[in-house]
Length: 336
Image 1 (cartoon, rainbow, N blue to C red):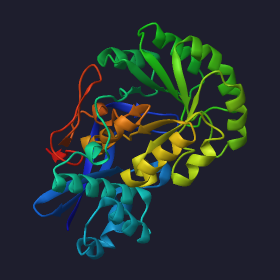
Image 2: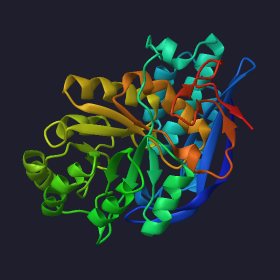
Image 3: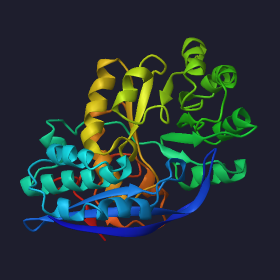
């Protein structure tokens, strides 16, 4: 296989803020794997919370470049097992795994959802994310992008007041993501008012390792709670089953589509609601997530919508949230 690593600095339409960080640009690594005149693309973004940079991923992959290029590629699943044996970070594995799936589907000339025997006639609509900002700016972002479902990032000293004000300007479904900023007591206290304000669920209100607090929340919250930072890899799913109502799987965190498919299956076996979420990323990564949508209860795949300039085309998200799946095989990614 021919391996190429490319750094992109993705520009955002607006400063994006969550409870622990803000940024205007997003570093991203795009991996291309070429074989038999076909090229597959994968992506993983830098992430300060997990101490991942483009340079750290690049170094990891360059250290095994020869092994990758000499690898006898058959299926993405076998390739993923090979990558795990190389002791790479999950972010680096994700970029390579996504590229391998895109390549495999293009070789077979079948989109991934068909390879997985799923039906793309039904799928959840993505939410659109409103980052932490002044109330005035958050309202302006909602007016700029009318949408049926908003994910609202919180973690301030006026969180319920923010939701009350936003509700005056939209009848959309609200989802709340506090990114580990609340205590169990705050979560339980806020939930009744947020439920009245049309909030569907709360995402990761407590610190990732606050399992005792989450047990309290599970028993007392009037709103469902979805794990994000508490659900990183496959082994986390079962524990989340006792502390959350659902899980949000991130491809970069778990290591790509291969483990994500197993996590989806395990989550459903445990009776959990299953969501796949994105980073602030281009249509390279978003198009891979889109292939999973027939399997999901919820999806957060608005990453490329937050950019002022995308670097690829693949899945198209219409103004009403409907998806136009690419006609090509794999994830259907083409770089612009």
